[in-house]
Length: 230
Image (cartoon, rainbow, N blue to C red; front, side, top):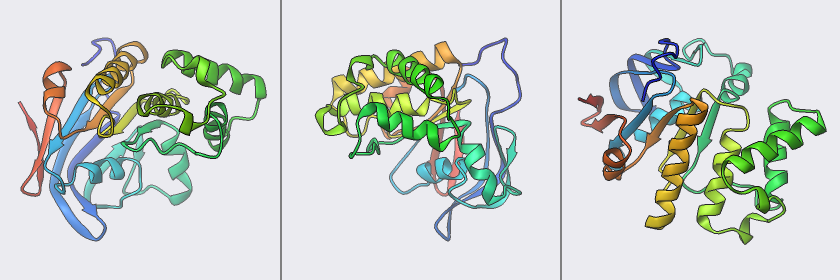
């Protein structure tokens, strides 16, 4: 959903882009603009390139052909040393949470901030308090990941994703490992973040009913293409 007062400069823009999975091209000629505040779903069968698009946006996958800009960075000319700076402007939520199991919630988030250049102890504590409060997990800061339910772990993963106030949140099957009720809570949380914080959301999902309950733009991957369903 677009905020009419927001910039019309895309935060993610693909032009005639070929998307790789390893050395193989899985999508040819992708054209996609994601504007500030957009909700964009990428749907399609397993193995059709949905996650490869996300990995291209984060700089993990090389862009085979065409153009792509992400938060002002041109991926064709992106230097390896600039990838961390790009990723600071993105938030990523994974299906399997990818929390550090050897440290508690607070230290998971502290580690993520340290990796993105935060040094002041008070600023770190304030930021962690802010994001944990946003996802309803302020009382869980001392818990280890294994002491949390799947839904709680995903809330912590979302808190980690919004630490640096990203322009785009990339969510790769964020409800894939959750039961129906918990999945609904996570979807509501992501959409409230979109509305309240203005971050665009690009979500990979195989569950098309999500697109009906939480309307946004929908792109479908099939036959080595990815096109918007209008």
